[in-house]
Image (cartoon, rainbow, N blue to C red; front, side, top):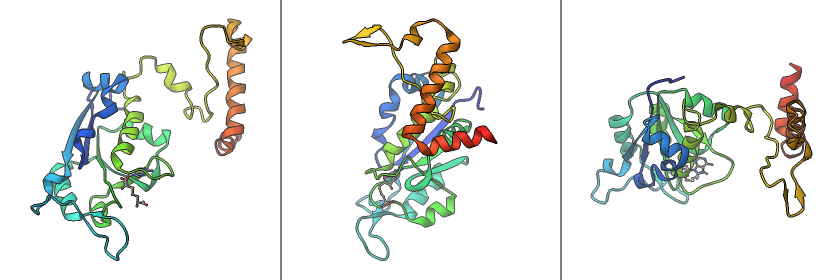
Length: 235
Ligand code: SAH
């Protein structure tokens, strides 16, 4: 794990003003202010060479939309990519999972490419060995939103960012199960009671109840995770 030195994040985008965006608030914002991670944005448009500042062009082979030019992005990468993991946000990428998030949180430097429209000329991604990462099976308008979500998940795992280290360990996915339901005060709200066991003060019974709830909700909502969980228990 990167214990002392802050995680260095570089983002290449045509909308640098979107950063830090919501990462500037709450836990991730405090972590930025406390130098637990650092942010550098690179405006890809600064590397355009025509007088209109174009970064994209029509797709080879025809079709809708525009594609980011390899020469423009290549020039930005040549100047600003200094090693470490290079990630391109893309619906064609490998799915972002908590496992990948944990891996990224252990890096010392992440460079992230955000694009719009139809995406990026494949040659520049190949030349720089960029990894495509997807945040889910749906299409957004731009990579910036996806990058912020990925970074949010990564930053909260950096040392000292979460106040209560325990809360990271029991959360959905970390155990292979979805989390049990949560309750707080008042004990009765509009006739609905907090489950009696949670008020019993009986730690063993509470743990058993929570595990049973986690198993139940995972079985019903996510048969895919449930199967993996059962397999991991028998192996
Ligand atoms: N035509 C492309 C989608 C382009 S969406 C395709 O079908 O694959 C425009 C940009 O938004 C993408 O280049 C990518 O940077 C970002 N984006 C959209 N959906 C995303 C997702 N699920 N995960 C990560 N990035 C995404």
